[in-house]
Structure formats: structure tokens, C-alpha cells
Amino acid sequence: MTSSTRGAATVVAPRERPRWLIPTSLVLVVIGLLTSIYLTYEHFTDNATLACTTTGVIDCVKVTSSQWSTLFGIPVAPLGLIFFVVLLALCWPSVWRRGEAWLDWARTGWLTIGIGMVVYLVWAEVAKVHAICLWCTVVHVTTFVLWLVVIFGQILSGPPTRSTPARR
Image (cartoon, rainbow, N blue to C red; front, side, top):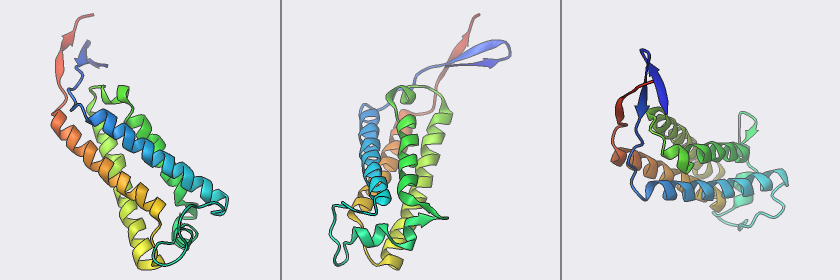
């Protein structure tokens, strides 16, 4: 990547990432994406084939059909789908290899928003609905683990390095 600096372009060197960071983040994003696709499908088919128990504390239908399954009138399942589509773009291997610091900030910020949503949804499940959805829990745990992976991976990557200005 290049950026203009007083007539000369500054070349941003690729950052050395821990070997596990790119594949781990990508696998976690795909898990979250697939689960979100499933939950979105179930939401729009009225939980017709939701594979989960519907008795006791574990009750996916109770959770996914409760008033807490929407945020400002928007179903949370498609919001989760959008969340993971954006993460797929941010955690794509070629994007990870770019040296721009704003991408690290974007990943961390987007995941932090996701963590805030996870905290809210877990609170709603436990305190308001009094039931837990196992599929939702997969998304919640995946988001939390992905947040940790990205933060620690970026810390271990160190700050972005810049090479000397390129000649035109």
C-alpha cells in the first residue's frame, strides 16, 4: 500500500503476523457466519426446523422468538449475519497481510461492538427470557474467542512498520 507524503509515497511494509492468527481468525469467522446464516434462516421460517430442545433452561425457540430477539425492531439474527460478513472481509488473509494500522483498529472496533452485543444478548437470555439458545451461544462464544484471538494476534504483530519513502 502506498500513501502520499509531501510528494513522495511511503511504502507500508507487510507486518509479520503470528502463524496461527490468519487461519484461526478465518475459521472462527466462518463458524460464526454459518451459525448466523442458520439462525437467520430459522428466523424467517418461524423456527420451523430449529434443531434445539424446547424444554427447560435450554429453549432456542423461546429465545429466538422472544421480544428480545429484535433490536429497535430489527431481528438480531440478520444483524449477526451482517456482523460476520463484515468480519469475513476484515479477516480475509490478503486483508490481514496489508500493513495499514486502520485495518487493525477496524477489526478491533467491530469486534468490540460485537462483544457489547453479546453481553446484551446474554443478559437478555438469562435475566429476561430465562432460557438459553445453544445456537446463539455458539455465536456468542465464537465472537468472544475471535475478539481475544484478534487482540492478542495484533499485539504480537507489533506496530506497523514503514520503509523509507519510495522514489517516483
